[in-house]
Image (cartoon, rainbow, N blue to C red; front, top):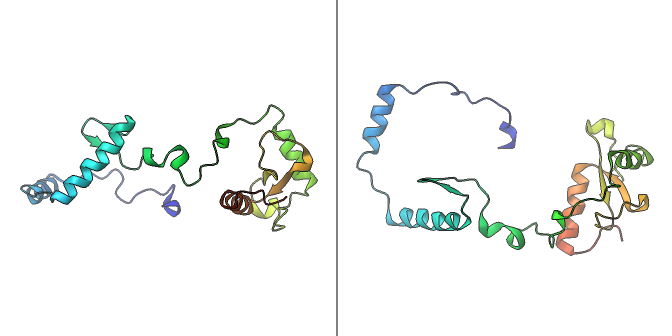
Length: 161
């Protein structure tokens, strides 16, 4: 849960009493998993065993990336372009220049960098990471950047053309 990120759990550092452990163990002794639950565990293990890194010993590591949701199967797949690197000319100085040129203001919603308390993103209008022409770059707040990024993903076209 993002809202809980960074908070300390109420029970951090507390040890369970021997009595609690004994009672819990007795309560679980003799309980059987349903066949449906066993089958779900088997299927989960098969998926994760195929990837090799999702299972350690007898423990299933829940919360890891699922092999069936990687690469082309992931909902945010963008034809492999995210793996491409930026050119050497994509520097912090260039991004600072673009923010300065845009008066440190989001070019979509007009919120300022001071109001946000973080640096604005610099977005490629034509979605081409290798194009560092200042005419192709604009300053956006994270909210607008994500909205534009996902709308171009869904519709398959650049939002600024």
